[in-house]
Amino acid sequence: MKITEQVEAFARPVVERHGCSLWDVEYVREGSERFLRLYIDKDGGVDITDCEAISRAVDPLLDEHDPIGEPYHFEVCSAGLERALKRPGDFERFMGSPVMVKLYRPHNGLKEIPGILRGYADGKVTVELGKEQLTFEKSQVALVRLRVEF
Image 1 (cartoon, rainbow, N blue to C red):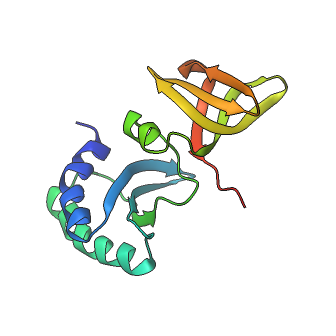
Image 2 (image 1 turned 45 degrees about the vertical axis):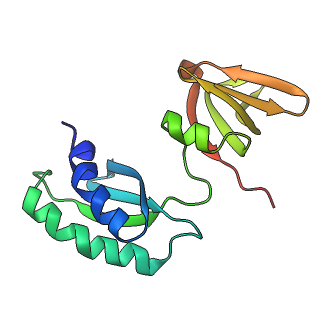
Image 3 (image 1 turned 120 degrees about the vertical axis):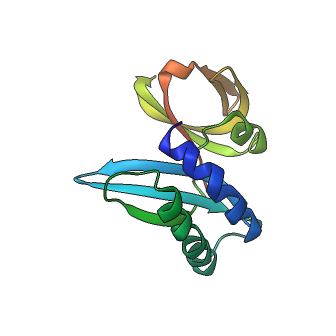
């Protein structure tokens, strides 16, 4: 079982007891340092108090379960307004929302396509751009994230 899956299994109930939902668990290397991050969400938005309370509650569980055998930094963060969509449920939840699709290779000269999320199936992402609907294969898409319009 991957580190992120292990952490998700014991962190999710703690996050939910604090009135939040666990959006994502990330374990990454940035430079020479490693980071374990929990991204949380709740109706009305997450604040620093939520992050601090969940961090204090999960930290002893990390010591107990010890899923990572090397030094790392632990952070609890808001999923953010422009969060990445990763799982099929994320795409379902935000269908009809403004998104930014980042591509590995340019499409009509653009590597970033702003649009309205209109479909998701088997990794294919469909966005509406003006009157046109564009569908991108999973292999073309580097990232899909929500886009905030002002």
